[in-house]
Length: 260
Length: 334
Image (tube, rainbow over all chains, first blue to last red; front, top):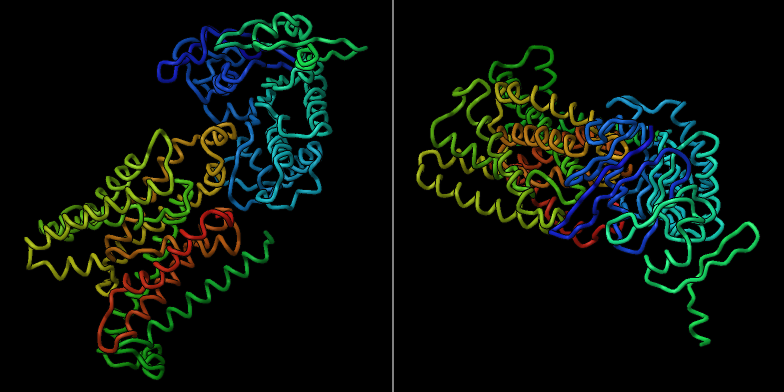
């Protein structure tokens, strides 16, 4: 069960974006990390079925993702893409309600129940005060929380997130990640999350897949993956891993460098 | 958006349409006076007046209405499909494609009965479809379709098609007047036959497009997000392009090239009630109808004793609006 990738390869214009990537995502909060251009977003697009691998495959509960029809796919998997712009004057509630679409037939109107689910998601994402606002005036963080609310509204068992908190302030970063983490615990949701911040990765993820140049360099628990040696090798940067009580911090070793 | 607003807007649009119908009966050369109209309703009018009303006025008003409705719904749908506020059957070359098809049919004498639904209509449809496919693939640069590449390809193709139409026209001088009327866009040649040929096509396509209103809203978010929300973007887009081309071709095949209706009406509505296609598409239908009916009445009146093709009236209103949109850019959320 879960999502299984086998030997995924993908090229664009002769550049290898993904190279023999294999993985099994079975439960919990899964983090995908790696430097820019490592292939994280492309990998997410393979999982969502948006892109077709040149070779290899992605299976969702044993069935090839590309063979599952799009509506069924959307009932099983919701996507929180990286920040994107939309210049149409919809309200926040209207946009969140779009998350109900995979559960609806073509001409089926939104019911009270759908509306209730949307409100629930809006509340969970902490944007109740924005519900009647136009999406045109939202800040980056508000936008992101709306998109997360829409994904929650989809009520899927799998949540794919592409750097969901990179544009948020600390409070909302923690708020959103706490929420996703809770969903993985209370509702058995699988969250596959491309992460930017290594500290948040360390503290939230159950399993971490660290990518480099289109390959999975290392995988395991945060403790196993986010070691000084591995991070330095993958990111090609000097770092320090500092333990402080329950928390672990991965910091750039820049300051030390300056002093020396 | 408050519900009341779209309901009252709907009422206003229906009233405008009704007013347009009444005006079209009374105004213009050989207009019926109120007294004559009342006589007509009581069945006491002269046979000549009855003929004018029943066989000229009424089909013309009805044809203007459904053609306007079709063009407006087609414009609204294309703006959604292409995620582009500038899309319109005329701007995108669909109308010119249809016009070339119709011109070929007329020149080759494939007139009205060659194929079940009418040779002119059939040719107009096929060429409309080819035109939009050509424009879409021409404007696709590295997988993306920008406003300007779309506009430029549409205009370029339109010019090419117009040139071909002129060549055909010059070779077939005997059919020139017919072809010219066609290219300027007019409903003056309305007949009950034309009305009943295109009515089912227009109703069917418009209603079918309205079924796609929700996927259309979602499509605005782009392919990846649409698919993650359960909308098969490629399939929806393809079906909508087919329906829109059929709709535009049906309209163009009985009226010729009437520009800017599909651009103006959906835009004005969007400014008033927002971008939700579930409201926009039905409103576009009735507003487009009312607009073309009123424009046609103006076309009948503006120069005494002369008929101006309604396409000229819509261009006079439409071009400044088009320029205004271009200049305003995409700031206001359209």
